[in-house]
Image (cartoon, rainbow, N blue to C red; front, side, top):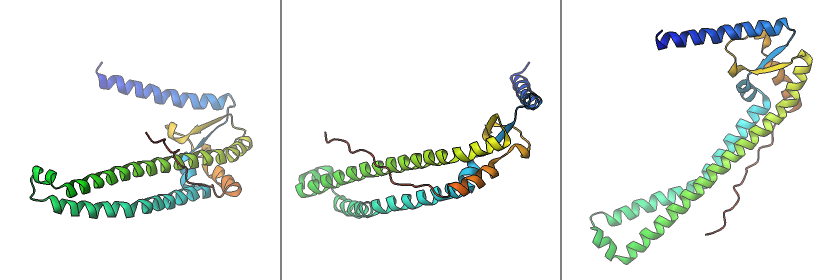
Length: 196
């Protein structure tokens, strides 16, 4: 059998297995519900709140870096003009220019390090906000699970097919919106590294 036929057979067995498993679970009295995590984040008040706060924080962080970035760009162009047309030996002989180039390189390296720290801080902040969001979802989800008497909660991203009646995302969103319309988002800081 060709490799393509093997893949098609395997795929059909997977789909058939999933199609058989769901009715089998229903026949056994197991209640399965499904949630769409992406919808929870994009459609709930708390999810929208997090997105707004993270976007604002990202803009604030970029604005913190902008003056230094603009100064470095201007100074870099000025230094480029000073070394244009000079040989390497001529540049090396000009001690004032070498000092300016060295100082510029140090400032550029410091800026790159600062930009990396700011990026890490944003990632930490985003991660903490999502952890807090997931904690806020749990009570709303458990309330829906209890109402529906569900024994299994599945992620929509992991399901090939499901009936719309199994999706309880809208119900979880309504309960989350009622209980937790906002999530606190505060900038997380990277611990300062000791000087070496």
